[in-house]
Length: 474
Image 1: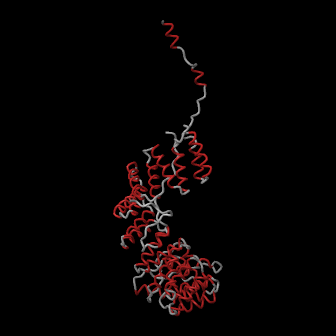
Image 2: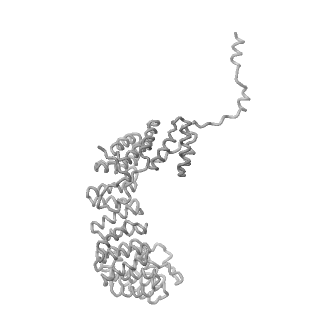
Image 3: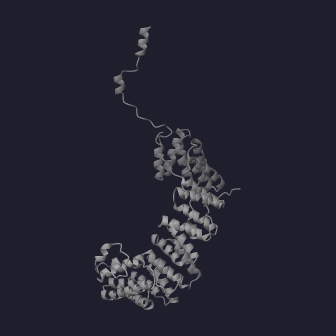
């Protein structure tokens, strides 16, 4: 018996040496996951036909149980406009993986796109239980409540979204709620906060500018519209506002003035000349109009007529140093240093008078340009220019006539254009120049966005409309 037991104990499948020498078998991917990387690659490359073919093959092999393949197929269906089909597939994903907040978010988004806002809210609330710190869920809940006209709940959700993550879209939707309620002051506060967070967002700048315009705060209105045009010179929303105004009031010189400024910013100098000339025909005694006409003529390479326009601008405007500064720059670029120096001295004289008679601060770009021109003319810096230049070497550098580009287009900044716009809109005798197995990350659900054309009409406060007619909740 002892021998039998010993024999039983010593029966091994192989020796220790043979076990050590045997190579380890490579780890195999589970069949449910093995093609996910390739599906993902085709999807991000937008090769949807190859992606769909691979998904079909993968689902056939897995008997329809590969969650990732179903998920990506649903995304493709949505992109192709098959919203109901995408909803059904996302619901399948939610059944396969009920603890996935991403799956529920996609189900809710499909419901929203179908116009079923109440059902979307219910699913988003279920997703929020799985992930309480997802700003996108709060944002989308807020948008759904807006469609149901439950504005208090919408504000609650949107403020929660901003606490989790500040996002331009959330600010836009929150501002839209205040517009729907008719509270322009609160809408302006929201958009101001949004612009501080995202100063280059042209949609926010345009919306804020149009709100200021509606309230008659012209300086701030055109400052923000000018900023929007600086970041995006083809911004149709700011331009269409003035074009419509010109159609309704073709003889209003202020509108023509502002259209001239817009086209100057867009570098469409012939159109700028057209509108500024028309404005001068209705308001021939405003020196600033001639100055801007001279800027347009300079860029059209008509120097002689630009000089004549500057001469008229200087004759009519006795207190705006910006007129003389622009004229001095043109003269300097043409090699007429003595005449440029005379205009520069007028700039200093007017600036000194303004500084003593009021507490106004000069525009930083105007100060910098004056300092550069003073250094180029070798007259040093006047005491009136108190702000430092951005380039400290410019104080000690003399610009040669062979490099005129250094001083061209002093009106190129949005600040100078915004101030000029405001002076036209509210005309008065003040200078305008002052003032398990490794899983691939699923493509994310997206925040619900407002209709792009809506920001151009904040006063109307209409809700965005989906491309397809939404199904109304009962």
